[in-house]
Amino acid sequence: FPPSKGFRRRPIDFKRDCWVYNSVICYPGKELPDKAVDHCRPNLLNTIKELKPEKIILLGGPAVKSLIGHLWKEDTGGIGRWVGWQIPCQRYNCWICPTWHPAFILRSEGKAESQVAELLMERHLSEAIKLKGRPWKEVPDYKKQVQCIYSAENATNWIKTTFSRGAAVAWDIETFGLKPENDMEIYSCSLSDGMETISFPWQGEVVQAMKEWLQSDVPKIGYNCKYEDRWSRRILKVSVNNWVWDGMLAAHLLDNRQGVTGLKLNAFLHLGQESYNDSVAPFLKSSGGSNTRNRIKEADLGQVLLYGGTDSLLEYKVAQIQAQKLGVSIV
Image (cartoon, rainbow, N blue to C red; front, side, top):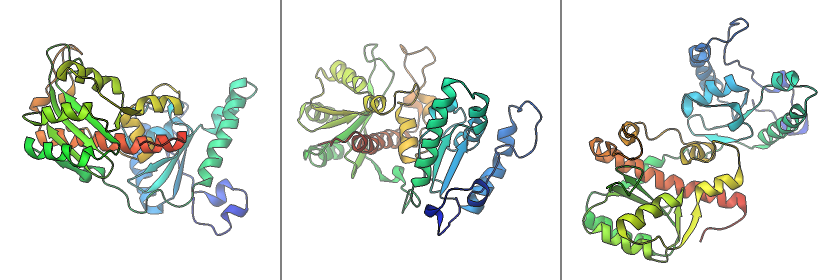
């Protein structure tokens, strides 16, 4: 939407108050070629850079694929997982608000699902228009907030001081596989209280320090907590004490659509965080399935620590937003 002094005092006129752009700028015929959106994407991105909009409303699947496929990942899935969100895009410091294409509503006219979709689409547009200004006064760089600590002694000191003050702490582990029962090990660990974030190799005296910390009363935040709890029980022989938040369960409560509960997606939806695991993702896959080891040890250690620390920091930030939406506080 371009600036308009009387914007809030008059109805929105599509042609007067909006810049309109197509994900495919030439007529491709009856069928949309598979690569048409990809080929036209540079034109869209150049237009966004030129116009610098505060809000971008995406109408339909091709529009979602065109922009979100560039910012988050190419495989965006169905339009159903995206409609209704207001995404604070970091790259362009604007709001991205997906909803259905009007043609979908018109094609389904008379059907019950069309009436529901029309009501929801009106709500999506109304909520998008209500957004004021840009999402960020200063666009955050979460990776720069992660401190990679290679010394077990230094990491232990952080755990016993900074992260034992009583404030809630998000924590995350990187492992050699998915199942701790199959002769697996923990490779690295990270902690974040939203202000300080550290990531360190799982070695030496830090292992005992983490065992004691996990049994302490410090409030703990996780994402799919059963994963970390399972590893703690197997490797350290202790259960995690005082879980106060599970981001995945909160995501289910806030939106029960299929495929919208993962941390990476929620970090994008709530914080505009684009993909941050590209350098380590190939090493986290096991060629023999979930019962075999991955290749995490072959990855650059610094990149693994940075990835793990970013995970913990984003877990904390997402938990803050989820708690606010649910009207509760995280101690």
